[in-house]
Amino acid sequence: MKRLLITGAAGQLGRVMRKRLAPLATTIRLSDRSPIDPPDTNEECVQCDLADAAAVHELVAGCDAIVHLGGISVERPFSEIVGGNIVGLYNLYEAARANGHPRILFASTNHTIGFYPQNERLGPEAPYRPDGLYGVSKCFGEALARMYFEKFGQETAMVRIGSCTPEPVNYRMLSTWLSHDDFVALTKTVFRVPVLGCPVIWGASANTAGWWDNSHLGWLGWRPKDNAEVFRAKIAANTPKPDPSDSLVRFQGGAFVDDPIFTD
Image (tube, rainbow, N blue to C red; front, side):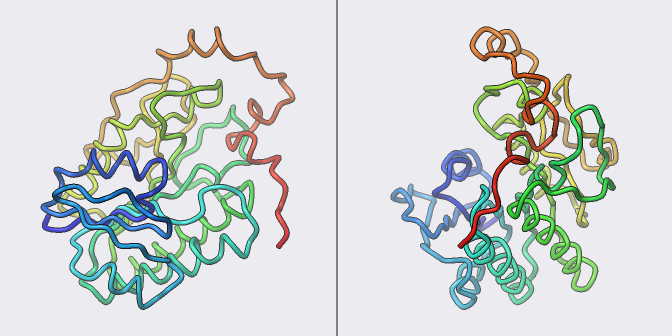
């Protein structure tokens, strides 16, 4: 590719992926509402508020693909979530529609289904059970992506990311962990496959204790290689075992199900 856009580039995952995804394009365009670290040789930085439609249109212009990590990623008041995750996502899809339909990897979340119990294995057709307003905003995002695909042919990988961190740090993450290596491999596959469509992809590594079924994606060619199980002994040695009544071990969304609905 000539130019890959990464939104949310100042965030925790964005800071990692800007380096790891650099080989995918001649130029990596980095964007965030917050200041971004100075650009490297093949990078360009654009500070942009996703709620600003004109600015997002300019941001997307000239891009061949988009890794959309931007927006609010935790439970916050609705007034904060709506700007980045609802209005901002609409602006991104309208900009993509006006600029040649660059393929999008949309960072959705496991919190779209957070109220499912941990003893239930889910496929992509499981009805939404969001565990907060953040999860609701990602349900909206998936619906928006699906509509833009059906109506305009805009291809999107809707990746319901579990816990994309250097390593799992608690018992729940033994099931939800997505290694950085596996996320990079998934991103490369999403932009390499000739026809993508608009699939739901469970963003998790090949965890022995996993809850999510990606068997519908055989055609995609992504095979996660890492397994959180190798960290089980380390977690057991450093983390107290949660009480069985704790949401961390009852619900797939973990502690998010207990988060309050913030008022403005």
